[in-house]
Length: 231
Image (cartoon, rainbow, N blue to C red; front, side, top):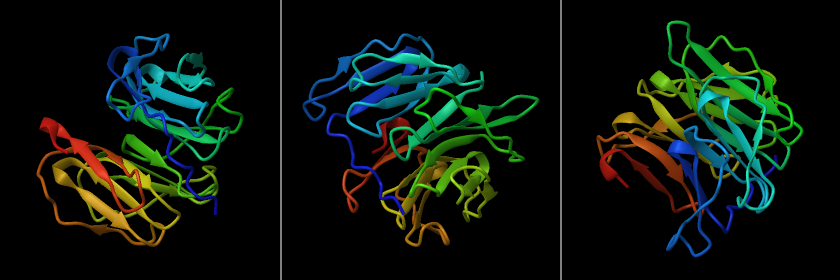
């Protein structure tokens, strides 16, 4: 299996109103970078130091090839909200999302050419997906509303539902190796696997607050942040 790419030495953040921030001093100062959009950007991913992607509302997908200093809008073939993006290398990646409406729409997008084109993969899933992570080139996990988790072992061509022993909304999934993965969600949910997702264990909650994002700067040290300033 392909190992997880190294974490970028120059972190970036994205958010409301097309906000993109970049730091080169470990987060002491942050510089705003032009995104070319006012859409809410919900996820950012850098498979290399220079190439990065950001996704957000109304099917927005952006790409940079100069470390985040400038961004270009890509065609996504969807107008639905994209919550998360992850790339296994510079050209192969996925974005997931959906829309909560009378006619529920769940979106899984895949690119194999560095974002120049995105294929929409039809699903029968009944919950919006909020996060996606690749532990290896062919295996990926996505999580979402009401404890929904899906997995592909065929590089995204087909996806199957996975039991997570958790009914709460899941907001972020992250694998730090092919074996070790974590998921966080509402009501302080933290779920862990040490065998590549074959089995998941719910850890004891240390907060009742909803947890929104997850980061592991090293394989053993991690942080999660959520509602009411929870870290």
